[in-house]
Amino acid sequence: MPTREEAWELVCEYTKGDSLRKHALAVEAAMRAAAKKYGGEDADVDEWGIVGMLHDFDYEMFPDPEAGHPWKGSNILCGRGYSDRIIRAIMGHATYTGVPRDTIMAKALFATDELCGFLVACALVRPSRSLDDLEVSSVKKKLKDKAFARTVNRDDIRQGVEELGVDLDEHIRFVIEALRPVQREIGLGRQEE
Image (tube, rainbow, N blue to C red):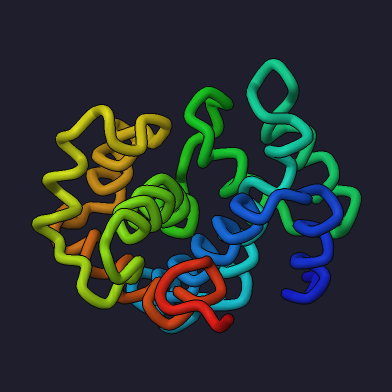
């Protein structure tokens, strides 16, 4: 399996935008935490993290099904030596591919992807611009506001939680806690001048 550094180089090769790179780091952090929580003793934390990091690496160049996301990215990953398991999990995060989320890793990716983006949006509108004081109740209130973070698919968040078999409140809390240690890297909290 390629290393985390090689995966990050691939992200940077295909993704020039800062926000999508930060999203890759956020989902990586959530997936590393998910590996420990849901993956069992044999879960490969690095593999789960790489899945999170790479799930949208092709999105900037191929931003929708018509352009080829995530099929083009999957072909690139195949050519670079990534496992079938990683590629299937990434393919499954896009419901329109028809690839079933038949592993706990694939289900965790689907359950964390949209939620990570939403939590970052929630933190950015707080005075602290931080996850430190973000409460589950605030997130749920924002989820009901269709005008807030309009591009985040609320149905995917709900479906992801159902497929993972977890409570929405608990999952929101879990992902907030998973992102707190990397919040500076993903553009949240107090930034150095």
